[in-house]
Image (tube, rainbow, N blue to C red; front, top):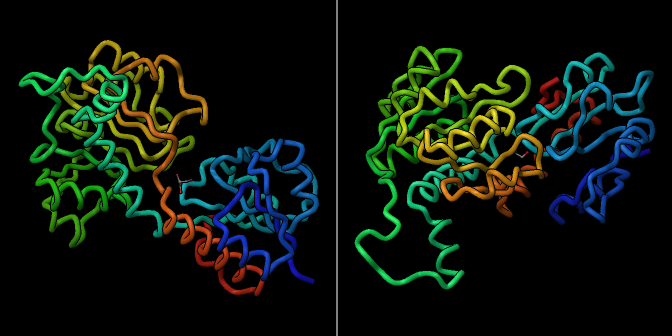
Length: 322
Ligand code: DGY
C-alpha cells in the first residue's frame, strides 16, 4: 500500500507527476487553500500533508486525539505557519526546503532595493497612466544604491546571498545583526561587520534587509521604536515574513516620511494588504514572489519528494525541522 498524501495547493506539474507516481496522491486542481474543516479531515485521512505558507497550522488546527498524519512536508523554507511544538507532541514530523530558494529570494531582495530607491514602480505607473511629460533633470530623482551601506538582519543563507550580491555587485558596505556570532570566510571576504545590537545596524544602514525567521521570537522585531532608529533617508526591505514588522507602525513611518521607503514581498495577513500601504508611493509591494521562479519552485517540490521518500522508506529525513 502506497502512503496517502494530500497536496494542499497546485504544485509544479513535474513535481505533481512524481508525487502521483510514487504515492497515493490527492492533488488540489482548484488551487483553493483547504478550509479548516478540510484540513481537519486531512489529519484523519492522509499519512502526509504537503503544506505551504498559505496553510495556517496553529495548535488549534491539530487534532486533539490520534491523527493518521505522520509527516507535514512543507513546500518552503519558512515554517512559522506550522506550530512545530503541536506537531512534535503528536509525533508528527515536519520538514522544509532549505537551500534551493536562497538565490532567488536574494535576487528579489536586490530587486526591491533597486525598485524602491530608484522609484521604478512609481515611474512605470506614471508612464502607463500616460502622465510622463518627458525627460527632465528633476524628474523622479531617487536615491543611489551603489556604494551605500546595507544592514542585514539575520545572516543565514539568504542574508549572506543578499549581502554578497550587494557587496560584489553594487560595492555596498555590509553590516549585520545576527543573534549568534558569524565569522566565516564568506562574511570576511565581504568585509561584513557584525554589530552588537539590532539598533546599531538600523542606525548605520541606508538599506535594511530582513532575513530572519517569522514566528513568536521575531514578531514585530521592527516596531515603531526601531523604525525611529533608522536614518530618515533609509529603506526597509522585507522578503522574510510579514509578522517580523509591525505593519501599522511601518505604514505610519512611511506616511510621515520618517524613513524614505520600503520594499515588501511579505505581509502580516497575506493575501490582505492594507489600503493605507497601497496608497503610498514610497513603498514597493510584491505578492510574496521571493521563490517564484520555475526553476526554484520545481527544486522546492523535489526537496519535498526527497523528504517524503526518505521518511516512508524509514531513512533519516534530510530537512527535518521537528
Ligand atoms: C519560503 O520558502 O519560506 C517562502 O517564503 C515561501 O513560503
